[in-house]
Image 1 (cartoon, rainbow, N blue to C red):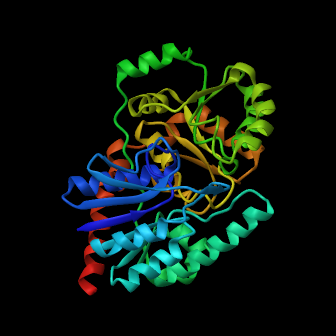
Image 2 (spheres, one colour; image 1 turned 90 degrees about the vertical axis):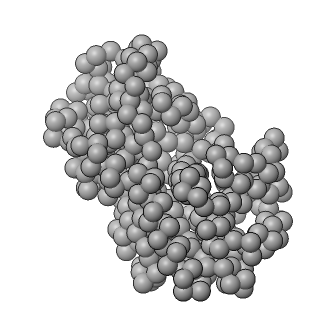
Length: 384
């Protein structure tokens, strides 16, 4: 099959959506398919055309940005040239161009599969309010015209004001997860490098420092946690400086984090092997997301594959990994006191939140996920 993916950001950009798309694209290529990604040239230093792990990446120049959204005047033109050359048009939303793209797919007789990663909820401002309205309209049109809509969980689809009206098109496929078993030598090096003391609780969080991720809720919860466990500390993995559209949020949050002193450490972006070691040395990880821009949280499963339980917000989709594996707890979004209580419960009773790596991997591996996509693509193509 010849598969054309469209999305705003692809590698080397780092986010859950780009990681999802990269893993799926790479796996489909390994299974003999031709995969193209049409995305933004969000930095001028990036090549316009590049092959990454067998995936043909085509980047379109960006004129300017509206919050986190790149405005690309030639994007639809480039898409119109590429769509007829492919068997499937695979849209990844949020994406303002999703509506005209889905209509172009229909016009060229190319089936459209839309993966609905999450709702778009930009920080409050007049311009962002307009972007949110346009995004909602685009989602309404694209979900109506798409042949199939893929979601991470039925839980998220049923709670979504838009997707709940399109359940007859919904196909549930969990996100592709890849996490190697932690290398004992790297784990040991990691402990030494970041001065991890045996018996001192380590709470991990892995995310961009972005408004919707809820890092401030963890910072507030740490005040209570430290009263019970004075040696506890947070290790934060992910981009925490120069995050697109999030500088004002970072500046607001820094005083809370600086008040925690050595109990909060930013590690930045890690390599995959280091990422596994990070999860291994954590006693618990946290996903304190605040709203429906988080529809699942792949880092939860990555943590579980390393044997580490999770405390996550009780949001549609986000609550699924802990419920299906038993490896953790949920708490009301934004409630720092309930987050602290859940963290303390897991830290005191770790044996109550364990599971088998193989059973977790059987649900979420990239190979399992790609086969499900192949089946959907083949079924839709056969009906055209």
